[in-house]
Image 1: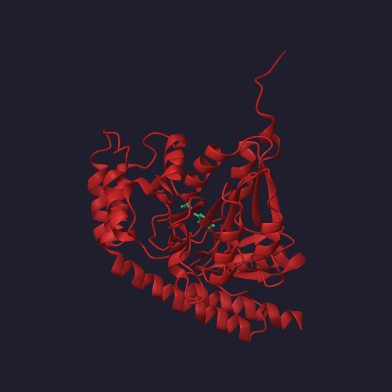
Image 2: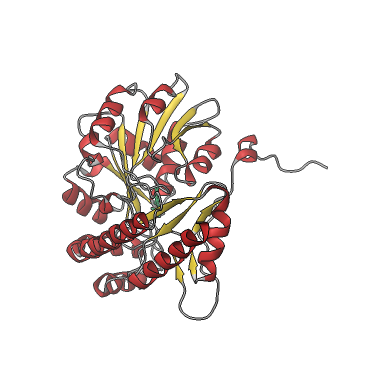
Length: 358
Ligand SMILES: *Cc1c(COP(=O)(O)O)cnc(C)c1O
């Protein structure tokens, strides 16, 4: 008997592993495995979202026009330079669908965001993974050297999930100016709002005046809307138009659109929360460094423990202490910055771990 014939490309697509919730145990536990924002929604944002839920018998605004109007004003771009989707991961899927098929190549750093091999694999294109350098940073010269005439897209994740460092200004400018102009450079800036290293560049500066650079941003992390799924691209009109062509109709719900607009309106308060998370991140980084951990520069809302073969044991120890973290077996563990008591507990567990290793 014959069976339905799936595309060959799917055979090599890895499954996405979502961050686990904490194991149920005594006392309070914390989910530090998905880089979520620990703050609950602002009351004003919640009110607007709930009001929009009253319209759920209607389709949302397919053009996402009110949100795009607000974003265009906020970012100083025009509406036709924007495209949105159900999270910036969805925008990346649409973008790759618009650009890639069998025989094409997509270059990105590795280890980086685990959605990349999946999003690339589904299109039938081949992932070309360029190892991070010894400091867990993108090796941009090696990435440039990996570009061939099959390359359609290069993805730069800055700050890099899961290792933490952001790409520096001069190296990134040189990189985007060296990549052939028929290759699209995607700057994934999901954590842009958390960056404090002054030697970095806002990706929007690099979009301006270039036909082959696009920036991806999201409301999931700094703005705390991970559960509502809104992300967007800012780039040349030809690129955002291609993304819109591939997008699912009515993907971004009215609840999500309204919550995103309300979040832009409440940006001052939300960015104050980001500031507090950044202060916690820097406190955690400094304490871990003092404990002797070689933690790479952390520019997002997470820290990276390079643990090699000890990764799974470390994650299990965190779990026992009521912290779920994100292990990458054989490589390391990513831990999200949470509320201060969660961070304190992480420092305790990490300190005990170091003491045992001596
Ligand atoms: C979280 C994250 C995203 C965005 O996810 P969405 O929730 O789909 O917007 C994009 N890129 C990286 C590197 C991320 O870590």
